[in-house]
Length: 225
Length: 216
Image 1 (cartoon, one colour):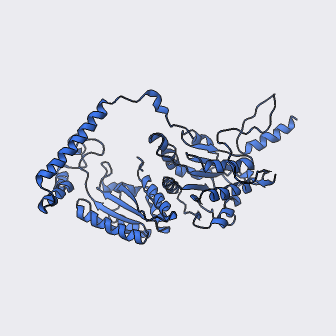
Image 2 (cartoon, helix red, strand yellow):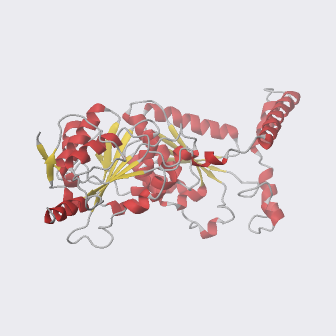
Image 3 (cartoon, helix red, strand yellow):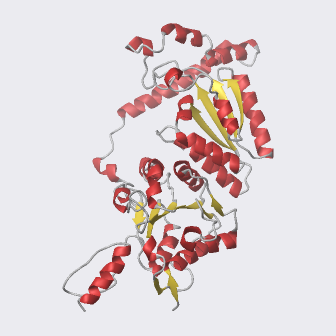
Protein backbone atom coordinates (compact mmCIF):
# COMPACT_ATOMS: atom_id res chain seq x y z
CA UNK A 1 0.00 0.00 0.00
CA UNK A 2 1.33 3.45 -0.80
CA UNK A 3 1.97 6.23 1.64
CA UNK A 4 0.39 9.65 1.21
CA UNK A 5 0.45 12.86 3.21
CA UNK A 6 -2.76 14.01 4.86
CA UNK A 7 -2.95 16.80 2.26
CA UNK A 8 -2.50 14.38 -0.63
CA UNK A 9 -5.17 12.09 0.79
CA UNK A 10 -7.68 14.95 0.98
CA UNK A 11 -6.78 16.05 -2.52
CA UNK A 12 -7.28 12.52 -3.84
CA UNK A 13 -10.62 12.25 -2.07
CA UNK A 14 -11.88 15.48 -3.60
CA UNK A 15 -10.89 14.41 -7.11
CA UNK A 16 -12.43 10.96 -6.67
CA UNK A 17 -15.58 12.48 -5.21
CA UNK A 18 -15.86 14.88 -8.13
CA UNK A 19 -15.33 12.09 -10.66
CA UNK A 20 -17.90 9.91 -8.94
CA UNK A 21 -20.54 12.66 -8.82
CA UNK A 22 -20.61 15.46 -11.39
CA UNK A 23 -22.65 17.60 -8.99
CA UNK A 24 -19.79 18.05 -6.54
CA UNK A 25 -18.15 21.46 -6.65
CA UNK A 26 -15.63 23.25 -4.46
CA UNK A 27 -15.71 26.91 -3.49
CA UNK A 28 -14.27 29.26 -0.89
CA UNK A 29 -11.50 31.83 -0.78
CA UNK A 30 -8.38 30.65 -2.53
CA UNK A 31 -9.48 27.20 -3.64
CA UNK A 32 -8.01 27.86 -7.06
CA UNK A 33 -4.67 29.22 -5.79
CA UNK A 34 -1.57 27.25 -6.86
CA UNK A 35 -0.91 26.42 -3.22
CA UNK A 36 -4.60 26.52 -2.36
CA UNK A 37 -5.64 25.29 1.06
CA UNK A 38 -2.36 23.48 1.82
CA UNK A 39 -2.38 22.04 -1.67
CA UNK A 40 -5.62 20.14 -1.14
CA UNK A 41 -7.64 21.72 -3.93
CA UNK A 42 -5.07 22.21 -6.69
CA UNK A 43 -5.45 18.76 -8.21
CA UNK A 44 -9.22 19.19 -8.39
CA UNK A 45 -8.83 22.62 -9.96
CA UNK A 46 -6.37 21.31 -12.55
CA UNK A 47 -8.70 18.45 -13.42
CA UNK A 48 -12.08 20.15 -13.39
CA UNK A 49 -11.36 23.84 -13.88
CA UNK A 50 -13.17 26.96 -12.83
CA UNK A 51 -16.69 25.68 -13.46
CA UNK A 52 -16.39 23.26 -10.56
CA UNK A 53 -13.56 24.68 -8.44
CA UNK A 54 -13.94 28.42 -8.07
CA UNK A 55 -12.63 31.20 -5.88
CA UNK A 56 -15.18 33.18 -3.92
CA UNK A 57 -15.39 36.70 -2.53
CA UNK A 58 -15.12 37.09 1.27
CA UNK A 59 -18.75 36.38 2.08
CA UNK A 60 -18.91 33.49 4.52
CA UNK A 61 -22.57 33.97 5.46
CA UNK A 62 -24.14 34.23 2.01
CA UNK A 63 -21.72 31.71 0.51
CA UNK A 64 -22.97 29.11 2.95
CA UNK A 65 -26.55 30.03 2.05
CA UNK A 66 -25.65 29.74 -1.62
CA UNK A 67 -24.24 26.26 -1.00
CA UNK A 68 -27.43 25.35 0.85
CA UNK A 69 -29.54 26.65 -2.03
CA UNK A 70 -27.45 24.66 -4.50
CA UNK A 71 -27.73 21.56 -2.31
CA UNK A 72 -31.51 21.89 -2.48
CA UNK A 73 -31.10 21.27 -6.22
CA UNK A 74 -29.03 18.15 -5.41
CA UNK A 75 -25.69 19.79 -6.02
CA UNK A 76 -22.97 18.69 -3.61
CA UNK A 77 -21.00 21.75 -2.50
CA UNK A 78 -17.72 21.63 -0.65
CA UNK A 79 -17.13 24.97 1.04
CA UNK A 80 -13.61 25.57 2.28
CA UNK A 81 -12.59 28.03 5.00
CA UNK A 82 -8.90 28.74 5.46
CA UNK A 83 -9.59 28.97 9.17
CA UNK A 84 -12.56 27.35 10.92
CA UNK A 85 -12.84 30.62 12.88
CA UNK A 86 -14.45 32.17 9.79
CA UNK A 87 -17.39 29.85 10.28
CA UNK A 88 -18.68 32.16 13.01
CA UNK A 89 -19.85 34.44 10.22
CA UNK A 90 -21.78 31.53 8.75
CA UNK A 91 -23.25 30.05 11.93
CA UNK A 92 -26.78 31.20 11.18
CA UNK A 93 -26.78 29.42 7.83
CA UNK A 94 -25.06 26.32 9.21
CA UNK A 95 -27.02 25.97 12.44
CA UNK A 96 -30.39 27.65 11.85
CA UNK A 97 -30.87 26.36 8.33
CA UNK A 98 -28.66 23.45 7.33
CA UNK A 99 -28.68 21.65 10.68
CA UNK A 100 -32.37 22.18 11.39
CA UNK A 101 -34.22 21.71 8.12
CA UNK A 102 -34.49 17.95 8.16
CA UNK A 103 -36.02 18.22 11.61
CA UNK A 104 -38.31 21.10 10.72
CA UNK A 105 -39.53 19.53 7.49
CA UNK A 106 -40.24 16.09 8.87
CA UNK A 107 -37.21 14.23 7.59
CA UNK A 108 -37.92 13.74 3.92
CA UNK A 109 -37.59 17.31 2.84
CA UNK A 110 -34.91 19.68 3.99
CA UNK A 111 -31.87 17.52 3.34
CA UNK A 112 -28.98 19.89 3.01
CA UNK A 113 -25.83 17.86 2.40
CA UNK A 114 -23.22 20.58 2.30
CA UNK A 115 -19.65 19.73 3.27
CA UNK A 116 -17.79 22.52 5.03
CA UNK A 117 -14.03 22.13 5.51
CA UNK A 118 -12.30 24.36 8.03
CA UNK A 119 -8.65 24.51 8.99
CA UNK A 120 -7.69 24.61 12.67
CA UNK A 121 -4.98 27.23 12.47
CA UNK A 122 -3.16 26.75 15.75
CA UNK A 123 0.44 27.62 15.05
CA UNK A 124 3.01 30.35 14.92
CA UNK A 125 1.58 33.82 14.34
CA UNK A 126 -2.05 32.79 14.13
CA UNK A 127 -3.43 34.70 17.10
CA UNK A 128 -6.55 34.23 19.15
CA UNK A 129 -9.06 34.66 16.35
CA UNK A 130 -7.28 32.43 13.82
CA UNK A 131 -6.47 29.41 15.95
CA UNK A 132 -9.64 28.13 17.54
CA UNK A 133 -10.98 24.58 17.41
CA UNK A 134 -14.72 24.81 16.99
CA UNK A 135 -15.85 21.21 17.15
CA UNK A 136 -17.65 21.59 20.48
CA UNK A 137 -19.95 24.52 19.70
CA UNK A 138 -20.78 23.21 16.22
CA UNK A 139 -21.36 19.59 17.27
CA UNK A 140 -23.57 20.83 20.09
CA UNK A 141 -26.30 21.45 17.49
CA UNK A 142 -28.29 18.40 16.43
CA UNK A 143 -28.43 17.74 12.72
CA UNK A 144 -24.86 18.60 11.78
CA UNK A 145 -21.89 16.25 12.01
CA UNK A 146 -18.36 17.31 12.88
CA UNK A 147 -15.48 15.15 11.66
CA UNK A 148 -11.87 15.53 12.77
CA UNK A 149 -9.74 13.04 10.86
CA UNK A 150 -6.21 12.50 12.16
CA UNK A 151 -4.88 9.90 9.74
CA UNK A 152 -4.54 10.41 5.98
CA UNK A 153 -6.60 7.28 5.29
CA UNK A 154 -9.45 8.63 7.39
CA UNK A 155 -9.19 12.08 5.85
CA UNK A 156 -9.78 10.52 2.44
CA UNK A 157 -12.51 8.07 3.47
CA UNK A 158 -14.41 10.59 5.57
CA UNK A 159 -14.56 13.17 2.79
CA UNK A 160 -15.97 10.53 0.48
CA UNK A 161 -18.52 9.55 3.14
CA UNK A 162 -19.39 13.18 3.74
CA UNK A 163 -20.13 13.60 0.04
CA UNK A 164 -22.78 10.89 0.38
CA UNK A 165 -24.28 12.15 3.62
CA UNK A 166 -27.91 13.30 3.87
CA UNK A 167 -26.93 15.93 6.39
CA UNK A 168 -24.50 18.81 6.53
CA UNK A 169 -20.99 17.81 7.58
CA UNK A 170 -18.21 19.97 8.95
CA UNK A 171 -14.67 18.64 8.59
CA UNK A 172 -12.02 20.25 10.79
CA UNK A 173 -8.44 19.73 9.64
CA UNK A 174 -5.59 20.73 11.93
CA UNK A 175 -2.86 22.52 10.01
CA UNK A 176 -0.13 20.47 11.71
CA UNK A 177 -1.56 17.31 10.18
CA UNK A 178 -1.10 18.21 6.52
CA UNK A 179 2.45 16.87 6.29
CA UNK A 180 1.99 13.70 8.28
CA UNK A 181 2.12 10.52 6.26
CA UNK A 182 0.22 7.26 6.41
CA UNK A 183 -0.92 4.33 4.34
CA UNK A 184 -3.86 5.08 2.12
CA UNK A 185 -5.71 2.54 -0.02
CA UNK A 186 -6.04 3.33 -3.68
CA UNK A 187 -9.37 3.98 -5.32
CA UNK A 188 -12.74 4.92 -3.95
CA UNK A 189 -13.74 3.94 -0.40
CA UNK A 190 -15.87 5.43 2.36
CA UNK A 191 -14.98 5.55 6.04
CA UNK A 192 -18.12 5.26 8.20
CA UNK A 193 -19.09 8.47 9.94
CA UNK A 194 -19.55 8.21 13.70
CA UNK A 195 -17.26 5.26 14.30
CA UNK A 196 -14.04 5.75 16.24
CA UNK A 197 -10.74 4.55 14.84
CA UNK A 198 -8.92 2.36 17.36
CA UNK A 199 -5.25 2.96 16.70
CA UNK A 200 -3.76 0.96 19.50
CA UNK A 201 -5.26 -1.71 21.74
CA UNK A 202 -4.34 -2.51 25.31
CA UNK A 203 -5.68 -3.19 28.79
CA UNK A 204 -4.36 -0.50 31.13
CA UNK A 205 -5.61 2.88 29.99
CA UNK A 206 -7.88 4.38 27.35
CA UNK A 207 -7.03 7.61 25.62
CA UNK A 208 -9.71 9.23 23.50
CA UNK A 209 -8.86 12.23 21.41
CA UNK A 210 -9.42 14.02 18.15
CA UNK A 211 -7.42 15.58 15.37
CA UNK A 212 -3.82 16.52 16.12
CA UNK A 213 -4.04 15.22 19.67
CA UNK A 214 -4.20 11.72 18.22
CA UNK A 215 -0.61 12.19 17.05
CA UNK A 216 0.43 13.46 20.48
CA UNK A 217 -1.37 10.56 22.15
CA UNK A 218 0.42 8.04 19.93
CA UNK A 219 3.77 9.63 20.78
CA UNK A 220 2.88 9.54 24.47
CA UNK A 221 1.95 5.88 24.20
CA UNK A 222 5.50 5.14 23.01
CA UNK A 223 6.76 6.12 26.47
CA UNK A 224 4.84 3.26 28.02
CA UNK A 225 5.85 0.55 25.61
CA UNK B 1 -37.37 27.38 0.84
CA UNK B 2 -37.62 29.84 3.65
CA UNK B 3 -36.16 30.78 6.97
CA UNK B 4 -37.37 33.07 9.68
CA UNK B 5 -33.98 34.78 9.76
CA UNK B 6 -34.26 37.95 7.69
CA UNK B 7 -32.44 38.03 4.38
CA UNK B 8 -30.88 34.57 4.43
CA UNK B 9 -33.35 33.26 1.87
CA UNK B 10 -31.90 35.66 -0.68
CA UNK B 11 -28.67 33.68 -0.59
CA UNK B 12 -30.68 30.46 -0.93
CA UNK B 13 -32.24 31.79 -4.12
CA UNK B 14 -28.81 32.74 -5.46
CA UNK B 15 -27.61 29.21 -4.65
CA UNK B 16 -30.51 27.78 -6.55
CA UNK B 17 -29.66 29.98 -9.53
CA UNK B 18 -26.06 28.79 -9.30
CA UNK B 19 -27.28 25.20 -9.56
CA UNK B 20 -29.44 26.09 -12.56
CA UNK B 21 -26.44 27.63 -14.27
CA UNK B 22 -24.15 24.71 -13.46
CA UNK B 23 -26.75 22.27 -14.74
CA UNK B 24 -27.37 24.46 -17.77
CA UNK B 25 -31.07 24.80 -17.12
CA UNK B 26 -33.34 27.62 -18.26
CA UNK B 27 -34.99 28.00 -14.86
CA UNK B 28 -35.19 31.28 -12.97
CA UNK B 29 -34.79 31.44 -9.21
CA UNK B 30 -36.97 33.98 -7.36
CA UNK B 31 -36.41 35.58 -3.95
CA UNK B 32 -39.17 37.51 -2.16
CA UNK B 33 -38.22 39.81 0.68
CA UNK B 34 -39.20 43.03 2.41
CA UNK B 35 -37.47 46.39 2.59
CA UNK B 36 -35.75 45.51 5.87
CA UNK B 37 -33.67 42.87 4.08
CA UNK B 38 -31.59 45.76 2.74
CA UNK B 39 -30.28 46.26 6.28
CA UNK B 40 -28.73 42.80 6.50
CA UNK B 41 -25.30 42.13 5.06
CA UNK B 42 -26.38 38.95 3.35
CA UNK B 43 -28.22 40.81 0.59
CA UNK B 44 -25.06 42.63 -0.50
CA UNK B 45 -22.99 39.46 -0.46
CA UNK B 46 -25.70 37.78 -2.52
CA UNK B 47 -26.06 40.61 -5.06
CA UNK B 48 -22.30 40.70 -5.55
CA UNK B 49 -22.04 36.97 -6.12
CA UNK B 50 -25.05 36.87 -8.45
CA UNK B 51 -23.61 39.68 -10.55
CA UNK B 52 -20.13 38.13 -10.74
CA UNK B 53 -21.56 34.84 -11.98
CA UNK B 54 -24.48 36.24 -14.05
CA UNK B 55 -26.95 34.09 -12.19
CA UNK B 56 -30.61 33.90 -13.21
CA UNK B 57 -32.09 35.13 -9.94
CA UNK B 58 -35.05 37.48 -9.77
CA UNK B 59 -35.06 39.50 -6.57
CA UNK B 60 -38.48 40.87 -5.62
CA UNK B 61 -38.52 43.46 -2.87
CA UNK B 62 -41.89 44.25 -1.32
CA UNK B 63 -41.26 47.70 0.07
CA UNK B 64 -43.97 48.44 2.63
CA UNK B 65 -41.84 51.10 4.36
CA UNK B 66 -41.96 49.50 7.79
CA UNK B 67 -39.86 46.92 9.58
CA UNK B 68 -42.28 45.73 12.27
CA UNK B 69 -42.98 49.30 13.45
CA UNK B 70 -39.66 50.96 12.63
CA UNK B 71 -39.84 53.67 10.01
CA UNK B 72 -37.20 54.48 7.43
CA UNK B 73 -35.94 57.35 9.60
CA UNK B 74 -33.98 54.89 11.73
CA UNK B 75 -33.15 52.47 8.93
CA UNK B 76 -32.10 54.29 5.80
CA UNK B 77 -30.64 57.60 4.71
CA UNK B 78 -33.18 59.67 2.79
CA UNK B 79 -31.06 59.85 -0.34
CA UNK B 80 -30.36 56.13 -0.49
CA UNK B 81 -32.30 54.15 -3.08
CA UNK B 82 -32.45 50.36 -3.02
CA UNK B 83 -32.41 50.16 -6.80
CA UNK B 84 -29.21 52.24 -6.86
CA UNK B 85 -27.63 49.89 -4.34
CA UNK B 86 -28.38 46.93 -6.61
CA UNK B 87 -27.01 48.76 -9.65
CA UNK B 88 -23.80 49.55 -7.80
CA UNK B 89 -23.12 45.79 -7.73
CA UNK B 90 -23.83 45.47 -11.42
CA UNK B 91 -27.40 44.23 -10.99
CA UNK B 92 -30.17 45.60 -13.19
CA UNK B 93 -32.92 47.14 -11.08
CA UNK B 94 -36.35 48.71 -11.54
CA UNK B 95 -39.35 49.86 -9.54
CA UNK B 96 -43.02 49.05 -9.80
CA UNK B 97 -46.39 49.56 -8.16
CA UNK B 98 -46.98 46.59 -5.92
CA UNK B 99 -50.71 47.21 -5.69
CA UNK B 100 -51.24 47.21 -9.46
CA UNK B 101 -51.44 43.65 -10.71
CA UNK B 102 -50.90 44.56 -14.35
CA UNK B 103 -47.77 46.53 -13.56
CA UNK B 104 -46.44 43.68 -11.45
CA UNK B 105 -47.27 41.11 -14.11
CA UNK B 106 -45.71 43.09 -16.95
CA UNK B 107 -42.49 43.97 -15.16
CA UNK B 108 -41.95 40.44 -13.92
CA UNK B 109 -42.84 38.67 -17.16
CA UNK B 110 -40.63 40.96 -19.24
CA UNK B 111 -37.73 40.37 -16.87
CA UNK B 112 -38.20 36.61 -16.91
CA UNK B 113 -38.17 36.53 -20.71
CA UNK B 114 -34.90 38.47 -20.93
CA UNK B 115 -33.35 36.47 -18.08
CA UNK B 116 -34.08 33.19 -19.82
CA UNK B 117 -32.38 34.39 -22.98
CA UNK B 118 -29.51 36.04 -21.20
CA UNK B 119 -28.99 34.81 -17.61
CA UNK B 120 -28.43 37.63 -15.16
CA UNK B 121 -29.75 38.83 -11.80
CA UNK B 122 -32.58 41.37 -11.77
CA UNK B 123 -34.06 43.32 -8.86
CA UNK B 124 -37.60 44.69 -8.89
CA UNK B 125 -38.76 46.86 -6.02
CA UNK B 126 -42.53 47.10 -5.55
CA UNK B 127 -44.14 49.71 -3.31
CA UNK B 128 -46.94 48.44 -1.10
CA UNK B 129 -48.33 48.61 2.43
CA UNK B 130 -48.97 46.29 5.34
CA UNK B 131 -52.47 46.63 6.71
CA UNK B 132 -52.31 44.72 9.94
CA UNK B 133 -49.68 44.24 12.61
CA UNK B 134 -46.40 42.44 11.94
CA UNK B 135 -47.75 39.39 13.74
CA UNK B 136 -51.44 39.05 14.51
CA UNK B 137 -54.89 40.03 13.29
CA UNK B 138 -55.15 43.55 14.68
CA UNK B 139 -54.45 46.97 13.22
CA UNK B 140 -51.46 48.64 14.82
CA UNK B 141 -53.42 51.79 15.71
CA UNK B 142 -56.03 49.67 17.53
CA UNK B 143 -53.51 48.07 19.85
CA UNK B 144 -51.61 51.13 21.00
CA UNK B 145 -48.75 51.23 18.53
CA UNK B 146 -48.14 54.79 17.49
CA UNK B 147 -45.94 54.78 14.40
CA UNK B 148 -48.63 53.74 11.94
CA UNK B 149 -51.71 55.96 11.93
CA UNK B 150 -55.25 55.06 11.01
CA UNK B 151 -55.18 57.84 8.45
CA UNK B 152 -52.14 56.41 6.69
CA UNK B 153 -53.78 52.98 6.62
CA UNK B 154 -56.96 54.36 5.12
CA UNK B 155 -55.03 56.04 2.30
CA UNK B 156 -53.50 52.71 1.38
CA UNK B 157 -56.73 50.79 1.79
CA UNK B 158 -58.05 52.85 -1.11
CA UNK B 159 -55.33 51.16 -3.16
CA UNK B 160 -56.36 47.66 -2.10
CA UNK B 161 -54.92 45.48 -4.88
CA UNK B 162 -57.56 42.81 -4.43
CA UNK B 163 -60.34 45.37 -4.78
CA UNK B 164 -58.63 46.97 -7.76
CA UNK B 165 -58.33 43.61 -9.45
CA UNK B 166 -61.93 42.81 -8.67
CA UNK B 167 -62.99 46.04 -10.35
CA UNK B 168 -60.88 45.28 -13.43
CA UNK B 169 -62.34 41.80 -13.72
CA UNK B 170 -65.89 43.11 -13.55
CA UNK B 171 -65.45 46.30 -15.58
CA UNK B 172 -63.59 44.50 -18.34
CA UNK B 173 -66.09 41.62 -18.44
CA UNK B 174 -63.78 38.87 -17.32
CA UNK B 175 -66.10 37.85 -14.48
CA UNK B 176 -69.44 38.94 -13.13
CA UNK B 177 -69.89 40.13 -9.57
CA UNK B 178 -71.88 36.97 -8.91
CA UNK B 179 -69.11 34.68 -10.18
CA UNK B 180 -66.52 36.42 -8.06
CA UNK B 181 -68.72 36.08 -4.98
CA UNK B 182 -69.06 32.38 -5.71
CA UNK B 183 -65.30 31.93 -5.87
CA UNK B 184 -64.86 33.86 -2.63
CA UNK B 185 -67.51 31.67 -0.97
CA UNK B 186 -65.77 28.54 -2.14
CA UNK B 187 -62.45 29.76 -0.78
CA UNK B 188 -63.96 30.74 2.56
CA UNK B 189 -65.53 27.31 2.88
CA UNK B 190 -62.25 25.54 2.18
CA UNK B 191 -60.45 27.71 4.71
CA UNK B 192 -63.12 27.11 7.39
CA UNK B 193 -63.01 23.39 6.71
CA UNK B 194 -59.26 23.25 7.20
CA UNK B 195 -59.43 25.51 10.23
CA UNK B 196 -61.89 23.14 11.91
CA UNK B 197 -59.86 20.15 10.86
CA UNK B 198 -56.76 21.65 12.48
CA UNK B 199 -58.71 22.57 15.58
CA UNK B 200 -60.03 19.04 16.04
CA UNK B 201 -56.85 17.18 15.14
CA UNK B 202 -55.03 15.29 17.84
CA UNK B 203 -51.79 16.72 19.13
CA UNK B 204 -48.64 14.84 18.11
CA UNK B 205 -47.21 12.19 20.43
CA UNK B 206 -44.51 13.48 22.75
CA UNK B 207 -42.01 11.00 21.29
CA UNK B 208 -42.31 12.64 17.88
CA UNK B 209 -40.49 15.66 19.29
CA UNK B 210 -37.17 13.96 18.57
CA UNK B 211 -37.94 12.51 15.15
CA UNK B 212 -35.29 13.49 12.63
CA UNK B 213 -33.40 15.53 15.16
CA UNK B 214 -29.72 14.81 15.26
CA UNK B 215 -29.55 12.01 12.73
CA UNK B 216 -26.71 12.37 10.35
